[in-house]
Length: 230
Picture 1 (cartoon, rainbow, N blue to C red):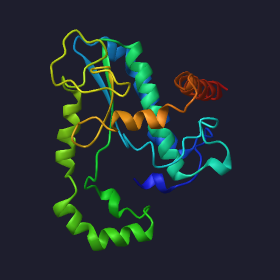
Picture 2: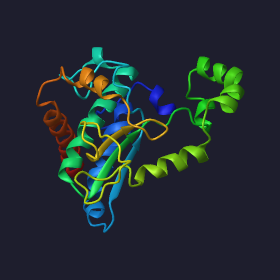
Picture 3: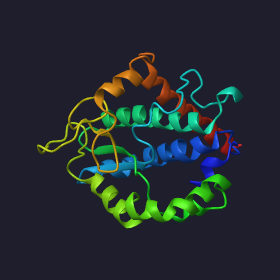
């Protein structure tokens, strides 16, 4: 949680929150795909962040990397990560049919040391000091319970796209296909957002937006690789 409060860029010129929450995760997932596809059992990629929170900030599709200073904010960075993770996972699910499933999960409030980290703003630490006991008792999840819930996201309810065997409890994927291989779920493992909300958030985007997101990611990777060679 702490690094999310820092508005700065990485040495590669990437927005820091987006580097932590999107670019690095997609790099890890794409680089591991050959090993995941080689598995004799269905493999899963699970990214834990903010599934279902498309409507909180602005998705500025003309500036995917939030390079323009006026577009740069923590809220927009989070929103970009949510949108682009969904679109990237849908593409990866299609490219890895029957082999790899991709799950973006919202963990809810989980008790970790991050809540009292000195990198948090003073007002957040004060609120946590005053209300933390009540939140821990009645609202939040323990790290152990959250871990168990996220481990279950690698189960049969979230199969790869066009998997050979699908049970009756397979959940709806982000593109509206049951068992479509890319899933956005809440802390209980159920799909979120509702399908009508997804239509609202994504229907106004350019038709080739998913392709643009893919090209942007590959371009970022290529530029960093080229820089590291010099």
